[in-house]
Length: 195
Image (cartoon, rainbow, N blue to C red; front, side, top):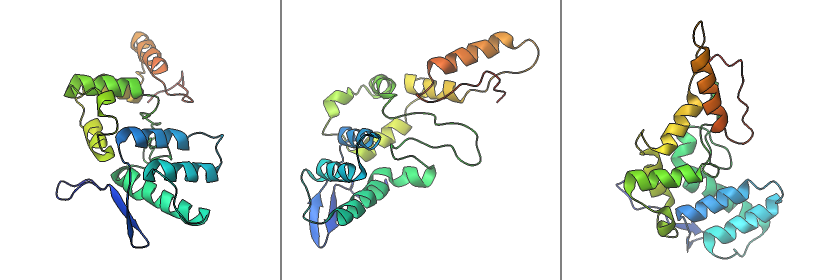
């Protein structure tokens, strides 16, 4: 949970021993990318995730490593995002039951837009902040981007309603074309979409 009243989490305690964890935004993004790799077994994902977070392996069996890894992932990395909106294992927002909207952004696929938007809004070259900018700070800055940034404009296009009714064919085509250009992998744009 992000709070200005408390320091950012960068350690965890396991069996009474405190361990440092690497929660730099770029490390977390690599972790999310790795978790999306369908060719890696669950065991390899857990082992790799532990090394990525702790900088080495832990001296325990795979079941305990998995419990530690998934607990850290859920509580520390996903944190507030899990409470505010359901997200997939890659950290991307999932459609809510009350909405038919599909996923609006991908931390991996939209990296170029995120980079440009941080530069535009904050004057931050995210490559210069690799290994330095904490994951929670990155998330707060991402959600605070102005509406005129590329990332926010792309999200707006993806959520745009397709016009219906008489005389709206030009606008309808323009919206559908824009949605196709900015669609995420695996998203289909329904030509008959009415909302």
